[in-house]
Length: 413
Image (cartoon, rainbow, N blue to C red; front, side, top):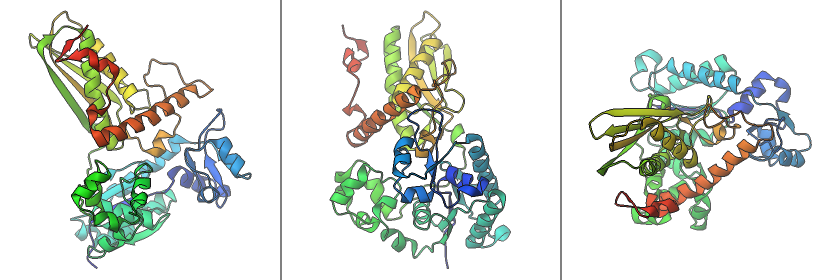
């Protein structure tokens, strides 16, 4: 069998899976991972038994308990989950340096060129599966294919555990016959639209022309290519924490207005934030760099609290404005402004459901009522709606009212 060299490791429900390893008493029982010490706590993760009873991630714990009378609530242990996630990474690095972290419990590996060390890719994948089981006690789904898209779809088909080697000749047919919701990029908002268009399988989506795909959404052509298993994205071993996004603006004439500087910073960081969220990341720091008329350069950065990240525009804009005001310490006009986002970390559904820490280190700790948690959750729901509009109609489709104060870089009174 001729196979690809891309391996996808998928631990379904890492938190719940770890709890079952640590406490065998919860195996086979409906349970959720959630904080029992705060009102209106939400379900962070859940067992397969709880899922079959109708419990879902993100549901209020009190709603879940009302639905399943025998439901057990297990307090989360983030440090333990992080340790296990790190063990998965270490096991993967034993086989190849090309390892990409794609979220908690998700890894991509490229074992091209390792045949003399570990044999055929199928043998390497099987050995990796055994290594993970020995080190962590977890039995994930391990899929082998020629592209990241095909490997990820296969890991979703054959979950919650097992080994799915796909040949290059057969992977397209397997992917085409799967429900369209298994295709990466098809979320809960796009799925109803596809179903209403009678696009229930990935193969039906793959048969669309690019004009038809564009009519579905702005990301339609990209999804059609994925459905055809056309995916040349490489396994990126660079840790997200070392990646960076940057944007800049040059003022004509040079700027001496702090409010205009702050507004331009918000414009730049909003566009960068949209690109960052499309990749599923949050930023640990926001940096502002000013180039003065005389050539001098000043920069300042604002960092999120430990264990937290900037995800929503309301967080990013506040951080960018703060960084700009801290950097501008001279009574000299500014020629150029640059904003950078860095220290990326996955901000997928699993991480978003952790009760977040404060945006900035200087802010007080979260109060026991969970008001901060609910406020951030509200911002993320609004942000999700805004991103859908921006993705379909462009960044200029929705702008803050303050944007109408500025024309051609000047303040209109």
